[in-house]
Amino acid sequence: MREKLAALREKAVEQIRAADSLDALSALRSSLMGKKGELTQILRHMGGLTAAERPALGQLANELRDQLEDALTAAAKGLRDAAYQRQLGEETLDVTLPGRRDEGGSRHPLCQTMDEVEDIFISMGFGVEEGFEVETDYYNFEAMNLPKNHPARDMQDSFYITDDILLRTHTSPTQTRVMEKMCPRTPVKVIIPGKVYRRDDDATHSPMFHQVEGLVIDRGIRFSDLKGTLLAFIRRFYGQEQEIRLRPSYFPFTEPSAEVDMRCVMCGGAGCRTCKGTGWLEILGSGMVHPKVLRMGGYDPALVTGFAFGVGVERLAMLKYGVDDLRLFFENDARFLRQF
Image (cartoon, rainbow, N blue to C red; front, side):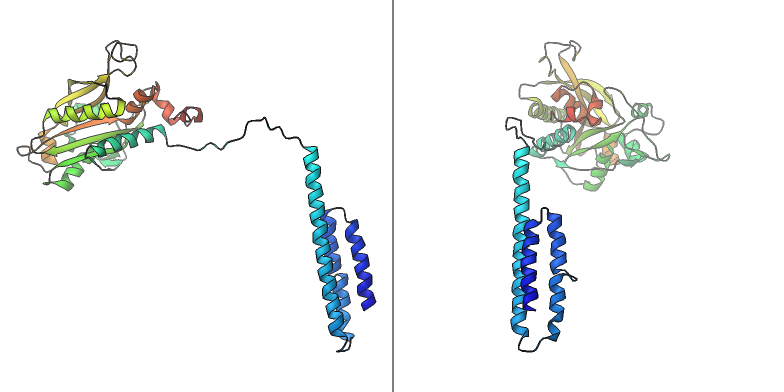
């Protein structure tokens, strides 16, 4: 058996040296040391040896196994190193080429705008409330002083699920829900951001868009508090040089009501195509909470007053970033979104 082990060593060393690929080495490993390999076949005859011969021959067999394993490992490393060197010699590396960078994503410009609006109002002491996107007719219209068949409902044509369930047309329904939850405590001072839905679709309107509603209720709230709050917000968002003006308007849920304009961000008030030569841009609607709305929320209008306002997030973003088509925010064009 000693002669067989010695002959196998010489034969295996030659075969390992002659192997010219990793596949050949793998096949050689199996033929030498696999379950049916030559070394395994030799070891099966150890049962015929005497008890005195077995330890010495067993040690020789183990030494041969270790030697073959080391030789196979070294040969495989040599073949891999040689292949790597050949690859380096064949391929050319142009170190002047620009590197490839992974471009990180970022929050959508509307989300960025919403976050900035929330941060400004939170710093002014407002809380943040979230309402339901699927609302009842009562909260969406009736609690906002828009009874059935009221003509102002035509301005907010929505998507109905049933005769009484619809996708909300504004974030105002949450005003009543907040009042019901808070009543009779004061002050109430919240903003309500979220998605709203109307049947509009053009360059300045979308069937789904975003609003931020504001609501303040307390004793002694005046119209001047509304103007001061909105002026502070506009200056924080668009710059301290901004000015606003309030024009009388009509909203069923506020009385008196006002449209809020700010000085044109494009021309600084000089007059341009964007502001149609007026120097002003309409930015949001506002007013003092209507006594009927206060009553439906549980508050006594003889004891408390309040103001409310609503602003479109898309409108804020379009004026801040100079976007002239609202639909760009929803088209998922990476070339547009990458700018933000």
